[in-house]
Length: 310
Ligand SMILES: NC(=O)c1ccc[n+]([C@@H]2O[C@H](COP(=O)([O-])OP(=O)(O)OC[C@H]3O[C@@H](n4cnc5c(N)ncnc54)[C@H](O)[C@@H]3O)[C@@H](O)[C@H]2O)c1
Image (tube, rainbow, N blue to C red; front, top):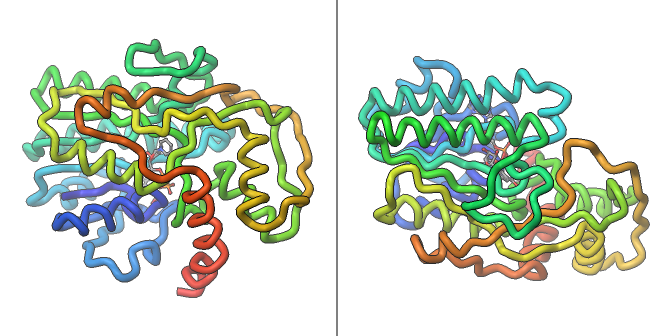
């Protein structure tokens, strides 16, 4: 089993879930946002390389039957400031991975897509029948990646599966720029929590081990080629509500919040339905927000500083 981007946030949780069910795991990662210390204590093979490089991908695919493709430039905001880098990592990288996997006879490729950025300002809840309409370069890059996955499934009979994640949070996220990490880091460093817009914007927050379980189930299941599924919580949570929950979990109910202008590339409301994933692979999120946020806060406070010393 190859996991591209396995030294990143979701990768760190995924490889532990894969090892727990007996998989042998190789990782291809250029360590641009991931870190080797995320893999401490796991028996995985880490190959440092780039998904855009044919030779790196070919080497990583030797003897591999299945691939989970997580490697990407994952920030919506960075995609606005550097759309070229985003295009290269997400579109060229995914194309290269699919093409080399096709040549190597890989049986199945599971790609990480997105349930929010793909849809722009579509009325939620979105599902697999909602027409994608991205408003950020990041969303566009994920739509292009899904397009190639579908085309390769039909043209070359590859089994490609695109999973559209909600907003993922949890341990291993200390390098992420998402709201949960940002809010907890603000509380810990005694800076105000910054909310862009009036706080009414909403997201579908899902705990990282639930996402990892959705991926593991998609590797096992007998799915039609080019299946697309949302892996999400199905729950709409406003950013204001999230800030409140973070303050409570961290024991800082009066921590200051400041409001900045809304950012143009961010969608306003988004959450999705996981009905299809429930029907096809029995996916169901198991970690509620209070539990997931408490685990995340504990990890960021206690484990992340230890990791930084490694
Ligand atoms: N975190 C979320 O909320 C979320 C939501 C929807 C989709 N996703 C997708 O899930 C995947 C994993 O996201 P994450 O949150 O773990 O991000 P992350 O940045 O923590 O992980 C990405 C990993 O890919 C590696 N990488 C980046 N470019 C690479 C390249 N060219 N070659 C090889 N390795 C490369 C990075 O070093 C990192 O380890 C991404 O595809 C992302 O777009 C994430």
